Image 1 (cartoon, rainbow, N blue to C red):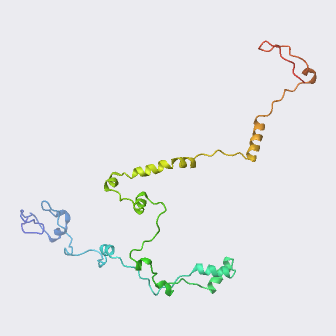
Image 2 (image 1 turned 60 degrees about the horizontal axis):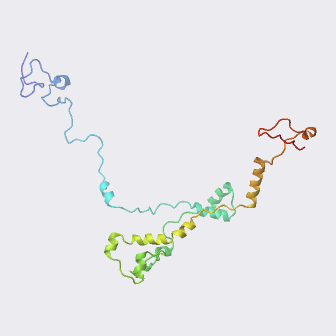
Image 3 (image 1 turned 180 degrees about the vertical axis):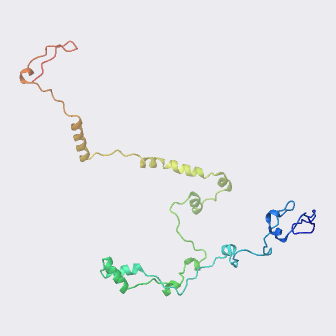
Length: 244
């Protein structure tokens, strides 16, 4: 057996004994890994900076640029406008086209397309608002339910003290106002009794006669109707004969 610096010798360790061939350097089973490291790769790999797969150029407009900068959509001027079905249906109704078969041919002979852009010159003019000339202009109108504070100030009364505002003293004014109109509120919420009508009275009478018919004497033959009872009643009196 010979000695020498073969392809399987590890630096810092005794050389491997025996015959060493160059083909043994490509055998993974014969590789002896270093302590704390993986086995040495026996396949010839490209350099460290090599990128596997297809490398695509990076888009300069990423998520950050899209988020912080809004680009308004610009319509393509070469695009053709689509059909205006609303206008064609209105024109077909005026022309007395009622069936779907007739309307299909009518659309081919009378096409209508959607309008693109502002075709009317009046639409390009921005409407003037009162606030454009008057800075103190206020939109809307004054509410009909004026609060106590507003009515006090408008009537020339004294200004509310900051102590009353902080302590909420004006809430008692609201309570007093509701106590004054309590009677009117209760009367408006009273439950009214239903009023009978002729129809309801007739239905009630018919139901009473159906479920509670008038009392009738039990039927008896005429020859037994004049006979009296032979058995006394439970209260000690003799029962009267039942009239025929």
